[in-house]
Image 1 (cartoon, rainbow, N blue to C red):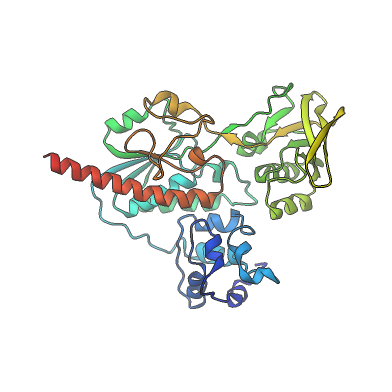
Image 2 (image 1 turned 60 degrees about the vertical axis):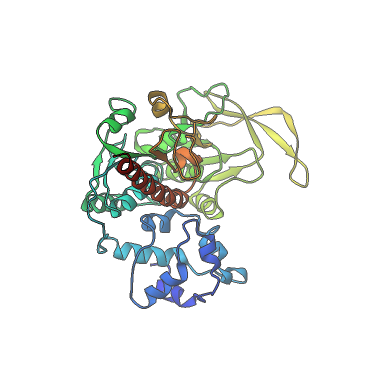
Length: 406
């Protein structure tokens, strides 16, 4: 192990006002977790703890807030969390209340859906997860490369879910053969939607439909089926674009360059550094004009000394690439909205919800990327924990009203 976790744990100051906890979107009690680890009491706070320990943006969250980082190196909290969560995951028994006779449907087996399934099963509900794809995990399975998140972890999650009684229906897209109205008909007292964002955002430029052009989210789902050649241009510099670049390099490409309009990308410093170490190159201030059979065509954006855009070059630059991959975010599919009367989405296709995650249909809730847009795993887990409480309260309140009516 690169970092000796016990040495890192001993560096923790156990602050009275832990800024690391403030920086964690799910409010993990980090000092208590570290102290318990030192005493040999291993436990979990977050159902997605193993995943978060590997893919969270720690430099801007827990570790970025650690007071030791102001003058030196912060405590490597992610390594401690990974050791603890990986060690106890298969051993720990999830305590669940007795079954209460109520059924909950979870549409989508990504981070949000997994979190909801765990919390509501613990409260005694019988949960069934429906997912359009073959394997559990959503973006964890099909959007994060194996070298960042080993897929064996997701198999362990599947066994854990099944072990507490969660039923899983793979290859079942709600909004096709089965619709939300069918779930309501079959006695699900509440329904959760966590279908993520799987539709690539397009550039709207000429050449986007050519055979040498692909979308990042599609590529990451199954890189082995693509023959990209030796030189690849990637449009975008977010975290997903870094995953694309590093995956492309691992699949044989020799020259991989990422292009972005701004002077800096949107990816974390760590992910950008790893992509550069893997061999990726970066070009900023490049505005895509079109894509042709030879590759993308750009114009250079002109910035002043303060980083403000003041113009764009008249000349175009042809970049020669065997393949071009567009990785500039993605949005939700419209299948559920189109097949469910009363379910409303906003201008960007994201589901409309109240502050508790309830959609425009009573008893139907949503969270994660399908509500917030493309966000992080830990943000999906944090919001879904709140939504699970709201679903539980809704079902209890509904029961109370029914009893009063009788």
